[in-house]
Length: 342
Image (cartoon, rainbow, N blue to C red; front, top):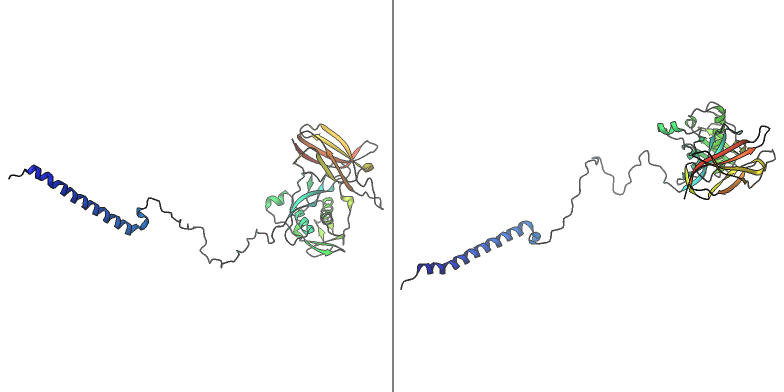
């Protein structure tokens, strides 16, 4: 019997093909086993493995010895030595100079935001603010701190406060008196300290020393007295303390402060800041009227008035006026530029 070669060859091809497929399957299985060994069990997973980022080396880190666990780093020179406490509104006194008034120059109170640090009294905090603060109102000046002090990076002086109910002792370093002032403003500078102490709860009288020495000469113009009682004669007879110069408020605007006025009243003016036109004028009665003490000196008292104005920028003026042969004049005044929002 004769076989057909062609037919015979077709019958052997499936066998060859099967063998080839088997070999290919074995190669794939072996390859998968090798991959699993090299990469681990996640190599064949269809889900991407999660990775944890390795820490990045900080090239700026010092190579010096590290701090022990739990240790706090040493504070830098600029770090405050005491933790910050609450911000309080304290009264700091500055010198104001209005050439068009009778009482000039005089001391003006300015309500100031002051951080009272832990362990500080309000007197200490207010004095430190006085020794390091530019007044907000451009009409005022500070015998202890000026724009040059600010620009030069000068280190502010620090007051040391002592005493008891029998009075307050304030010691200042000599460098606190480094600004050049004339004799008139030197006297007011001393009263800046006295008035700031007494307005923030310090008992009178105030004794002022320099580096622990009494009777020192300050600013090369004034010799310190043994003690200073309250002296309102150096205070302006009209002040505004409820709004800040350059501040923003809404209508009605509450204008309040302390003063002493002719017949127990103060004049109030509202001027358009852009044109200078008078928008409103009125007067306000002082709570204490025209009270004077036994020596005939005026006793200042509080006042408050509400002003209803349209939105805009205004100059609010509170003035102590007086009559003279030449007509009405300003004894003193205080003014603030405020923006009234809708």
